[in-house]
Amino acid sequence: MPDIIIKLFKVSISLNQPFIPRKHFPINIVPMFDYCRTSCPVRKCITRIITTFILLLLFITGCGTANNTDSLNVPDEVSVLPDSVSFSRAVAVQDTAVTSRITPELKEWKYAGSLPKGLYDNAAAVWNGFLYVSGGFGPGPDVNTDDIFIYKIMPDGTLDLHGAGSIPNMPLSFKSGAKGVVRGIDGHAMTASNGHLYIVGGKFQYVRTDCYPVSSVPCFSPTPTAWNRSVLYTAINEDGTLSDWHEVPLPVNTGPYTPGVTMVNDHLYIIGGWDGERNSRTVVSAAILPDGSPGPWIEETPLPVGLSKHAVTVSGGFIYVVGGNTGMATLSAYEQGYSKAVYSAQLQGSHSIGEWRTAEPLPDTWIDHKVIAVSDGLFVIGGRNVNEYYHYTGDYYDYIIQNTVLYSRVGHDGTLSPWTPYNKLPVPVVRHAVAADAGLVYSIGGTSGQDIENIGCIQGVCSAPYVRESGIYLLDMSS
Image 1 (tube, rainbow, N blue to C red):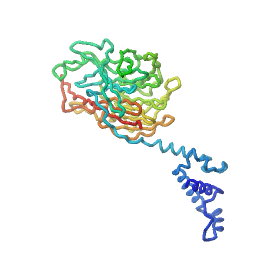
Image 2: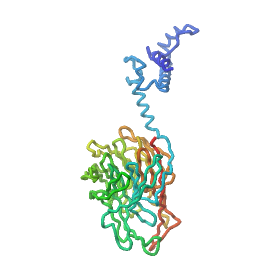
Image 3: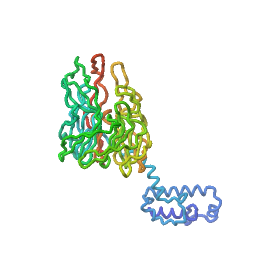
Image 4: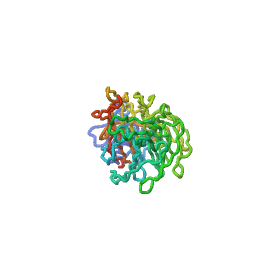
């Protein structure tokens, strides 16, 4: 079959004439042939149709790929395609144009395990076959924790709770207090590199243990919220357990609350975040030293706009910053600016960050989501995309939360294809954690909204507790 097509193709292009069979024709075709060579008004159209048809057959049968076009033996002086473009190059361009719009095979999210308790504003990271989940708000009204849960990743991607611990070496000022005060951390980020686990930023909060269940005793912290302006890190033992924690201060102008954090080739990058007064544009990096500690901080190219509650990932030598909050005036304000912008910057040979450029934007504004890079694409997971942070009902603030998952393909030059919907999460969540390992993507905890059936009021202030999700869901993109 391919040999026949190749012969037809050679005949059709030779002498710039249409293919007309000369044998076994019942009439004298010589006059007709001469006419077609000189005067036929449809000659060019027929030639193009036949050529296009043969090109299509070549493509379908696999004859027209870059590896076997040499077998056509078309003379160099014959221009098969306009502007002397080679056939193999034309096919390659066509493949790129088509596949850049393809969404990967749709796979279902599956239940992989559960947290010992529901959490939101938690963080997660993966190292050497173990999943680590830290901090976040647990059961009770605004009770954040210092827990760390360690899971062994099983061959099928499900999780086995391997151990649990805490973050014992937080700054001394947060270790104790009066009236049963406990410590915890939330709004932080977590990453891992070279056998070490890192907790970046977040906030500590004093919480009264004698006010839950809700009673007449105010549940509000007697001491203002304190920002974690440091990186906490620990060595990971061979069995997945953790060693002692250590602390390195962050640069003064870094945003410690909900920063974007990523690790690339043993270099830690911290991007944006809320600094207690405003959304930060600051971007800093540090090389990880042999003992696991971050080296000297280096200021990188700042973001085009200050951001917090955004999402950050790396793919193909490019850092991507997706969505986020641009307009929060104070932490207690319920008016925030939502962004659908996506920024990308190329990592230089020296591990520095190049100029930030706008990439394919999200289809809508997005906040409190997560983004993860898998193979040659990005997944945006969960979050919310309304233009108001809360909807106030008179008694409580109600989230509108998404279980949406979006996908964008990453080009060789770092560009992104338009975002397309992917299979949704089993439950809508925001302020959750996401981690990935060898194509296994985990969505961990989060809040799915407020429990309006259990509104509580203390000293005239009413609120509905957030529903803490404990489920861990898996998207297996490993094959």
